[in-house]
Structures are given as structure tokens and as C-alpha cells.
Amino acid sequence: MDTQTKLLLDKGEILPLMEEFYTIQGEGYHTGKAAYFIRIGGCDVGCHWCDVKESWNADLHPATSTLEIVEHVKQYANTAVITGGEPLMWNMDFITQKLQELDIKTHIETSGAYPLTGHWDWICLSPKKNKPPLKAIYEKAHELKIIVYNKHDFTFAEEHAQKVNKDCELFLQPEWSNREKMMPNIVDYVMKNPQWKISLQTHKYLNIP
Image 1 (cartoon, rainbow, N blue to C red):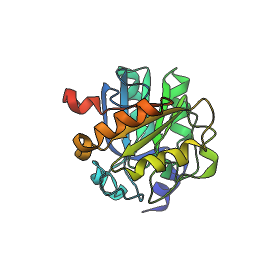
Image 2: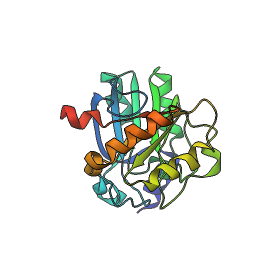
Image 3: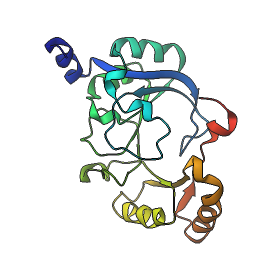
């Protein structure tokens, strides 16, 4: 990587863009809302069940002008969801500033494993076992979303629920490939522990991005 490219990446003026698209939010608190998704390449968290493993290697995704991305969002949506990969591997200050200058809401989904940058209207914290969140993000998270692959994940969920702020929304979401096995367990758990809600990947049921 040349010096100029690294400098622009460090400032967040370019980002390794994997894909961008206008769709309906499929998961969590904002399910059903129209939003522009920005998927940033690069992730070293390494979840074995990840459904976007092609995002892991940032070098595979072109360094794209952040202003160009913002222009695309402006044409379609009043909400932008930045996801990955792990978007906080990169500086999010510049892109969120430019989006908010246009009155576009900024949402992020993150494992919390890297320091929080950017200015956010909504932070969805989705912790992973391989690389746990940094302490500082728990107080700022608006939503805690735990992916449930096996029964131990309920214990994992409660461990993280004890760390977030009192207003944080709590969601359990079945891992897609294991959903038929785990869904009855999640339903039973939420009925016994109503502080939790169920999140489904509704976009997959609807066959949209």
C-alpha cells in the first residue's frame, strides 16, 4: 500500500467497500425500515458461521472514495447502515460526519472489538466469542444482538446483557444454518425472560439483500 492510500484510509476518506445497496433492514430493532447498506471489507473476528466470509480480506475490496459512497446514499435513503466485516477496523469519523450533514441517520453493526469511531444515531453491538468487545462500547450501545448457534449462547447473552446500559434493547437471533434446531429454544427462553426479544433475518425469508 502506498503512503497516500494509507493516509486516506487512516482519515476515512477512502474505505474498502465490499458492497452497497438500498434495501429493507432485516434484523433487530429497525426491522422493516428502508435503509442504505454499506458493507466494509476487513474482519479478523473469524466467526465460523459467518455468512459473509468474503468480507474478511480487505485487500479484495476496492478502496473507494467515501464522498462517492455518501453521494450514493443521498440518492436513495435517509438512513445508512454501516456493517461488515468489522467496520470499526477503519476510521468512521469522516463518513458519519458527511452523512449527518445531509440529515441521514447513521447506524452501525459491530462486534465492538475495536475502538468506536464515528458519530452514530444507532449502535447495534453484536459480540463475538473469538474477539470480545472493548469495555467502552457497552455504555453506548442502543441494541445488543446475540447470535444463537447453540445453547451455551444463552449464557453468553446474559454475560453481555449485564454490561450494557439499562436502555439497551436486547435481541436473540438464531444463526441461519441452525435456525430450525435453535428456534424452539429461543422462543422458550424469551417467554421465560421477557427482557429479551427475538430477531429474525427477515430479509432472507423475503429473498432480498
